[in-house]
Length: 445
Image (cartoon, rainbow, N blue to C red):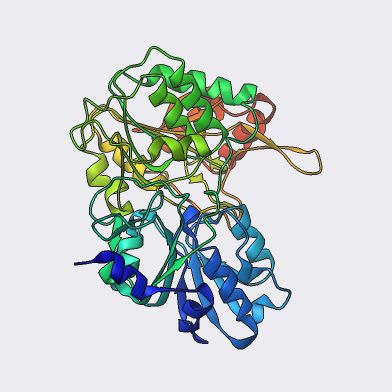
């Protein structure tokens, strides 16, 4: 078969391709760095012709063109699977909503619960066998495209080709239209602000708990990044990687010679991820690199898969935690910030792993815009806050004041342990609150 001839038959302009979208349609933009660019711009230009077009995306890296116009809410509604700062801005504009999920279940959502009228995603250029790679965002795309009535791919020469499991590429025979975009640079996610003293204190508590040969999962944020940096400078060796999101920290650890994956029971030698976002350093590293492997998220985040990897170490952030051990990692009251993502899956999977450990880390306090300092350890979660990790699932909780293991502890033992790592200025009040709730023993004093 002459795949290049087939390519030319399906090649069209973005303006022509988006004519496939009709009022009332569900349109899927894919995930993170692989949201469309030229197609999004062309669809926005059709905005005045359309009504009630519902668009899905997630971990949005730039403001979609369809969301920019003042009257955009009259034509489009944005549905985010996982909120970024951009997604929050779309929601504040009055045209966006969050779709709750455990990220590992997303492919099944598409298989069983969701319809897609038009899918449009960025892909790599086609190879000689007629395949396009989903690049750094395999995630749930294979199952989403299986459900799509019309599939439009936007080719971007800047995207790295990432080797992967089944479900990380699409063949030209399954594509309806091909658009060649402007080849924009892959959207970058910086490392954020420099590590704080609190970040370093937390990292210094966690890294000694990591054995040689451990398999790592790092969440996004300052503390996991700092842990990654400390690992890169440590004497640890023969580490493995199996993670939801692949970030620059893993590249630093790999380039420092710490990652071999030789002890992994699954995917030996490979660093496995569902999607990646970082700087150009990361995109250059993963391009056609046999050491890394993209995979659908129902593989990377499957508790049963994670549990088969010995000495699995999961490190994630939290917004706050209450005295029962419930962890909120996704909202400030009713204001949504991110999403459950894979945190609960990795918390559970790491604990089920032989020798595995799950760490939820956070600073003991947060300073508000008005300058007031509040404890991140609270009596009960704020009204409207989401319990990302139930009290029954949390293992290690870490702040700059210490690390406690909640497994096997009664309610009063939990309260005592959690208060012990709260900021000292708030401990007496937390004790008083625990007494009111009947989870404090006077003999604790």
